Length: 349
Image (cartoon, rainbow, N blue to C red; front, side, top):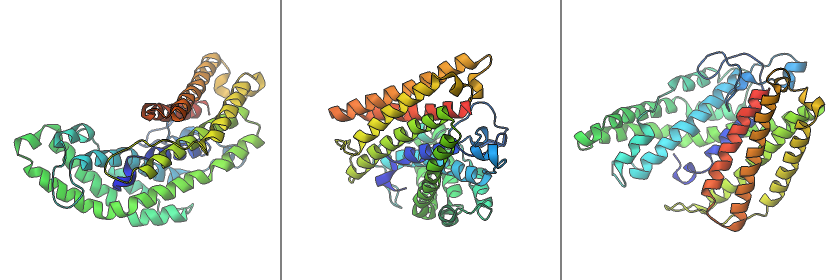
C-alpha cells in the first residue's frame, strides 16, 4: 500500500481496462464468477463483447486477459480501499498504534469476501499464451501475496463484524495487524507494478480498437468509444494533478491547470456531437442490433440518455474546474457517469 498514491489514481486503471474490453473477446464465455455471461455487461465483462476479430478472424480467447483484469480490479477496487481506511486509523508500521478511530474500519471491511480464486486463476494463466511480458513479470513478482492480504482482511472483517474489538480491548487487533503487516511485505512492493503493467496493456488496444471500428464504419460504436476515452483522459489528467499535489499527510484538492484539459474538453464536445449525429442516422442505428426490433426505440432512448448524462456530468466538471470551486463531487459524478456509459456500451454490442 503506497499511501501517497492510494487515494487517487485507481479509478483510472479500472476505466482504462474497461475501455479495452469493449473491443475484445467473443460472445459467450464466462464472467468472473464462472457463470455464462450474456445480456448486460459490466466493466469486466469481456465475454459480452464482440470485436472485429470475431467478424473477420473467428473467436479470440481473452481468458488470460480477463483473469488479469479481474485481479487488477480486485486489488484496486476491493483491497486498496480497505487498506486506505485501515491505515488512516492505524499507523503504517509493524507496531500496532491506533492513530484515529479504530471503529471506523468496520464499515469498510465487515462484509469483505476474500476472492482468493482470482489470484489463483491469474497465476494459472501466467505461463499461457498470449504472453504479456511486463504484466507477466509483474504478476510473477506479486505471486500469491494478494491471497495472504485477503486472508488477513477476512480475519479483520470477522473481528470487526460483531464488534469483538470492543469486547477484548483490541487484544486480537494486534495479532491481525501483525498478520496484515507480514502479508504486505511482498504485496506492497509489487502490486503497483502489476497495476501499472496491466494499465499499459489495456491502453495499447485503444487506438487499434478505434481504427478497426472506423474501418468497419461502425460510427455509433466509434464515436461512443471516442466519448468514453476522452472523458477518461480528462479524469486521468485531473487525478494526476491531484496526486502530484498530495505529498503530505493532509489531503488537498489543488487548483487544476487547464492547459492540457481545455483541448480535451473541446474533443469531448466534438465526440458527443458526432455520436448524437450517428444515433440520429437510421442507417447507422441498423448496424447495432439492439437498436432494431421490438426494443429498438427504448434501447436507443436509454443509450442516448446515458451518453447525454456523461456529457452533462463532464460539462459540470469543466465548470467546477474552471471556476476553481470544490470539484470533488463533480469529479466523482463524472467517474460514475463514465462507468455507467461503459456498461451501456457493453450492452449494445
